[in-house]
Amino acid sequence: MEKKRSREEFFQQFANLDWIPVKLNGEPAALVVNLPHEYELVKISPLRLLTGKLGDEWYPVPIEQITHIESFQKKTFFYTEDGQFSVSSTLKELEKRLPEVFLRIHRSYIVNTAKISRISRDFSSNLVVTLVDGTELPVSQSYVNDVKCVLGF
Image (tube, rainbow, N blue to C red; front, top):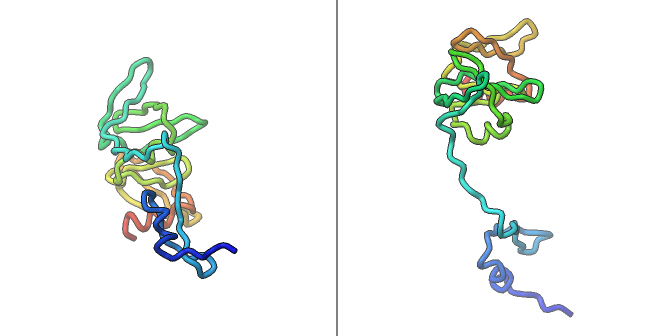
């Protein structure tokens, strides 16, 4: 018959690990995530500029100049008041690295909230974001709550 361990003995085995105490069927337990040694969690710093391609040339563009980013036919583009640039990263990758001023509003769009001039509704009562350059972008239903929360309405 297995001897029941004391609470201290149980938790001592996790002393050198990151863990969260939990109860499982009324008994003390520990939630532990064991990552392989080569897997390190690194804090990713936000991008300060994005380098985009226009024709055969690459242009580093400060993040604050970008109005929005779009995914279209498996390609990613970012836009400034000066034009459209292609970039090799996906929207998902960029979303992780962009500063908080950027907001995902659709599966295909991320916008710079500092470049929003107004938010309205279309004929179907869906939200539409209009940017300072006049570009109108739809807000998909799955992002409406995020948009309302971040923009405070």
